[in-house]
Image (cartoon, rainbow, N blue to C red; front, side, top):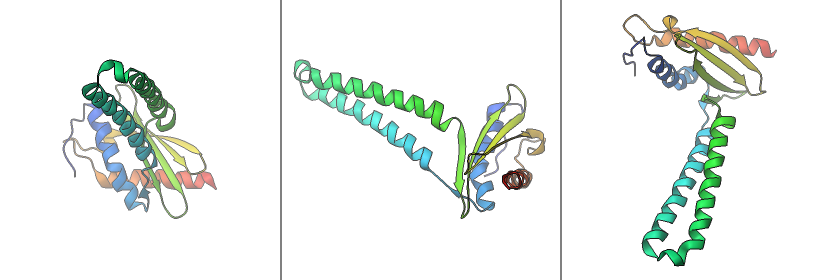
Length: 168
């Protein structure tokens, strides 16, 4: 699980932290919630199905016979693509982890500041309350590029406690 990453490559740092989040939050007592992923997959599969049906109609029938159906499918494809774009830009908006435990839910968004090894982590609780914290990559990666899972876990544990204390 712990692989070496280039500590000078922001995308590698971002990916390593994002991939560790399910393990971190599992250890904190949260279960993964796949609602957003399921919705994104449903929209994506619908787009693929429309394209597949259009392809089959084009192969099996003459152009004049299926022109009205092709127009409908192209329109449906455009609508589904627009829905997918709206979903990605306004609903999902960079969510990398979503989890629940018995009493609450949490959403995590991560974003690295431009050309800086500082990860801006946004915590959103079940009530919509947001908290933004900065995680310096040097605090969770060693000089060889290995993620120090316990340091990452401790940092997230501290932030979740802080989020809960702000809630009360």
